[in-house]
Image (tube, rainbow, N blue to C red; front, side):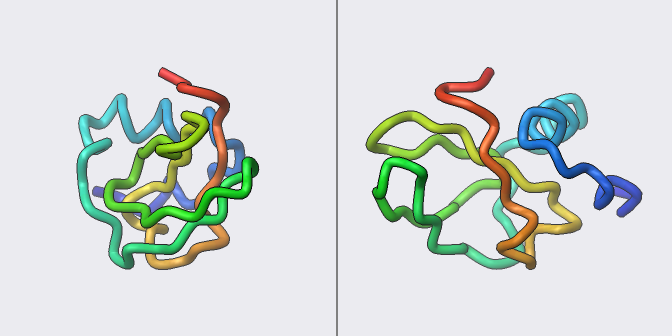
Length: 79
């Protein structure tokens, strides 16, 4: 996969891009501890994942998944 995707900054754009490539179930390079907007902390186990408490969808491109700052919220149960 080309790493040209690293310029995506918007959570929805990231999730849409990752899903369009069929990569949403890939494990990130690092299983980051995410502190959700609702206050829940969870481990990001796939590059697109919902908070288990409130359903906020978080996404990161596989090539940027080593950087927690690239993990972005996309919206509640963003599909």
